[in-house]
Image 1: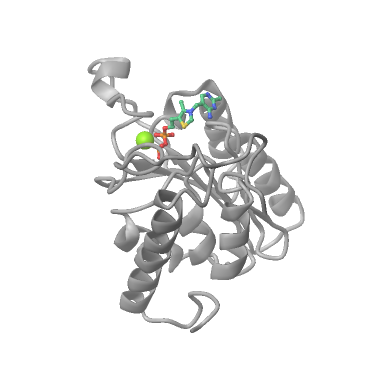
Image 2 (image 1 turned 135 degrees about the horizontal axis):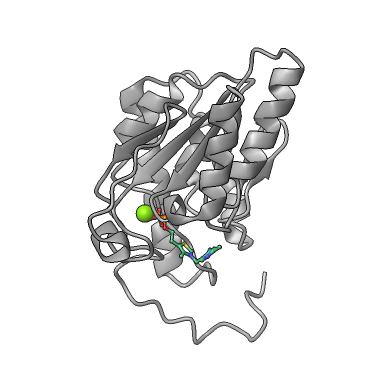
Length: 216
Ligand SMILES: Cc1ncc(C[n+]2csc(CCOP(=O)(O)OP(=O)(O)O)c2C)c(N)n1
Ligand SMILES: [Mg+2]
């Protein structure tokens, strides 16, 4: 089995991504991972398309729901599984891959803007891609970073992954009829998520766990 998604066709990538999530879902439902996990699903095709534009030397910033981003940036399945099994599903950092996630909603846009500023100063050909959810779009931090990137023409694209929920609350219940026009450094794709905000639909019995976490 190939260790990552590199050199696979789009169809093969999609299959492998879904298989990976399924394996983690099974481990989670067997009470083997006593940590919150935000599963990806339903957005495979959109992401494969977006990542076809992302170059190896580019920086990718991701969210609490970052497994697909990591795999598409070239991350190894086994390395990702290690992060997840030790409770770091939301805290993935890989310096070589130029990849960072944050569990803080809208925690990365300002870092992305800073890295983009440095890249511009160095006349680098690389750029920054910052993924955020539509929940992060509600945050002031995001607005500030977008304004800075737009104002100084920094090499950074923000991608809003719009599943119309912040936790489980849709946009209409968060800000009524308000629609905002972001500048061109912000893109959006819509998708229908396959999993709930956190974990899966099924209850898991963790009562067999010792206090303090798993007994690895
Ligand atoms: C600053 C901050 N506030 C609140 C939370 C709790 N929280 C975790 S995920 C989330 C909603 C995120 O929604 P969205 O950005 O749309 O991502 P999605 O889960 O829909 O992919 C919230 C409020 C947090 N992690 N950080
Ligand atoms: Mg959302």
